[in-house]
Every structure is written in structure tokens, then in C-alpha cells.
Length: 367
Ligand SMILES: NC(=O)C1=CN([C@@H]2O[C@H](COP(=O)(O)OP(=O)(O)OC[C@H]3O[C@@H](n4cnc5c(N)ncnc54)[C@H](OP(=O)(O)O)[C@@H]3O)[C@@H](O)[C@H]2O)C=CC1
Ligand SMILES: O=C1OC[C@@H](O)[C@H](O)[C@H]1O
Image (tube, rainbow, N blue to C red; front, side):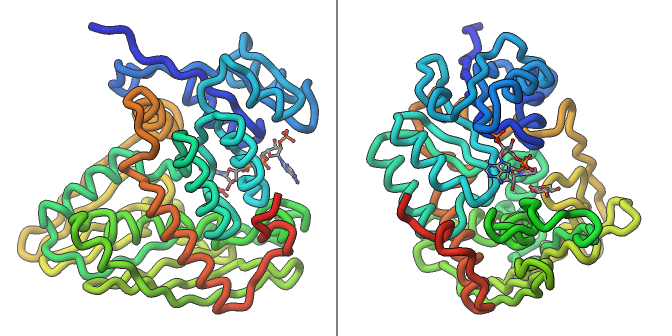
């Protein structure tokens, strides 16, 4: 058996999710049945302080990693193969630009950028430079997503005509968040559409668009209609509803931080994928569901549990990025850049229809 392909990660923005991601990186991949890939947390950088980067590395179980007190040093490190960006939404575009311009492949947290134009620039830059680029929508790589896309393609629930997808978590923003917090701060591109709505839209696009034959995709671009409710204190959205109309199907994506999709936290259905023969009901939360049911008329209910075998489940997206690097691919087939652009476009459209724009400094493509 050949040695596993090893990828050395550089973590840019050592905050909450970067910690979860890095802890998954250092897990033994065989705990999820993976033997062809190995990850190393090679380095981490904090723009706030070198000490923070050091503490981060030790906390995630990578005490031998190199700590940097600036992002520039991280992306210049020749021992780093790929950069993972995990900062607030407002900062993804300039930081991705910086990393790509330095010749580093990038995995960037969701949402890719503040708007579509920014993502388009990154995609063109990565393609021109021959560098791998991927939006870190971890949900797409969960075995549950893989299984459900396969069930749709094999016609288990007939022709899929409609999808309802919700990711809502009652968070009482007035109590939970200071107005400067990234969830509600317009300067950091806060708001529920970009933060949680991106997952509801992911379910719509990965079921109704990703599963289509390649030949029909060019004629299958959706039209999007949507609305939002604003947070009185900061003006970002706290609730939204998006209708995504494809030629032969309709997706309805919603998200909220005012109400909960699953108030009792009890595997309530958050996503319904409806076909002409039946439906697939996927558990809350949409970003990491742990089970689903297949309900076919006359055949009863088949329940499928999909627990994460070890860690949080962010390792699957890292495995994908590693395999793409190994195989010389510039993008993931599971989350093609075109689909990241389509989701960004949907969010742009909803914001435009609602008259919701972020400060020019973060909507700008000049950096
Ligand atoms: N995949 C998932 O499940 C999740 C994804 N996310 C996504 O990850 C990203 C980061 O979220 P999260 O980990 O909660 O973020 P944090 O609030 O923990 O911040 C992450 C890092 O970003 C930098 N940062 C924080 N605030 C600012 C600011 N005001 N200006 C500039 N930089 C700042 C800091 O880096 P430094 O130390 O270098 O200053 C910080 O360590 C977002 O895109 C979010 O949508 C978030 C949660 C879950
Ligand atoms: O990506 C995310 O998923 C989990 C949520 O709790 C978090 O706010 C969001 O950023």
C-alpha cells in the first residue's frame, strides 16, 4: 500500500470554526475509513497576536505547528501547501486574493465572499494562476449528502419537483450578540442569509441543480425571488425566504435567528425533498444532519442514521481538498465553483430585491 498523500495546512484566522476544522484535521483519518490522505496543521496565523496563534495550535493538538502574528507570513511559508480562511465574511475576498496572489491554493469558509462579483474575481484569478480554490461548505461532503444526491439520481423518489430547506436557530440576537458580533454586524457582512441561508440554499442547489445531467445544466439556471426581515438594531437580515425556480422544479430556502427549525432539538425534519413517488426528509440542522427518512407512497418509511464517526465532520471537506491537490484538480466536483457562484448570485438577488446592501467598503471589488 502506498503512503498517504500528506497536505500541510495553514490556518488563517484562528477563531472558533478554525479550531473545529483543525481538530478534525489532526484526527487519525482511519477513524472515518480514510487511508489515502493525511493532514498536518502546519501553521496558523493571527492578525491580532502571535500569542493567539500559539495558543490555537496547542489547543487543537498541533503544538509543533508554526505560529505567525501576521497573515502575510503564513501565506509566504513554503512549508504550507494550502490556506484555510476562517475569518468574518467581509474579509474573505481580500484574504483569498492575498493567498492566491502569493501562489497558494485556498479553501475559504462560507459564504465565499460578500457578493458574486468578488467570487467571480477569485475564480478567474485561481484559474489564471492554476490554483485550487473551494468554498468550505462542509455539508456537501457529508456521506448523508452523497447518499441523498445518489438516491435522487437513481430516481428513488421519482422526479424531484420541490425542495423545502430551512436552517433556523432561535438566538434572541438582542441577548446573544453584541452589535459588533459578526452575526449581526453589517461591517462584517453579518446577517442570517449569508451565514445560515447559504446552507438552506446548498440543499436546494445540491438536490435540484447538482444532480442534473451536465448537458442540461446550461439551460437550467434558476430565477430567484426572495425577501428578508431586518434586525432593528443593525439593519442586517434576521429572517429570509428565497424561492429558487428551476425549469422543472422549485426550491424554497428559509433561515432565521428569530425562530427555531427544531425547538426541542429532537431530529425534526428541516429539509423535504419531494418527488413524484415520495419524499426524503432530512433532519435539522441543515449544516450537519445526522439522519434522514425515505418515504415512498405504499412502501412505508425507511429511516437512515448517518452519525459522524469521529470528530465534527469537517474532515470530509479537507479530504476532498487534499485529493484535488493530489490529483491536480483546480476545483471540487462536489462543490464546483459554478455552483458557489450560483448560490452567491441567489443571495445577491434577494438582497437587491430587499434593498439590503452592505457598506461599500466591503461590497467593493477594489482591494
Ligand atoms: N462551517 C461551519 O460550520 C461554520 C463556519 N463558519 C464560518 O467561519 C467564518 C468564521 O467564523 P467564526 O469562527 O465564528 O469567527 P470568529 O469570530 O471566531 O473569528 C475568526 C477569526 O477571524 C478574525 N476576526 C474576528 N473578528 C474580526 C474582525 N472584526 N475583523 C477582522 N478579523 C476578525 C480573528 O482572527 P485573528 O486572530 O487573526 O485576528 C478571529 O480569530 C465565517 O465565515 C463563518 O460563516 C462559522 C461557524 C461555523
Ligand atoms: O456555518 C455556521 O454553521 C453553524 C452556525 O452555528 C454558525 O453560526 C454558522 O456560521
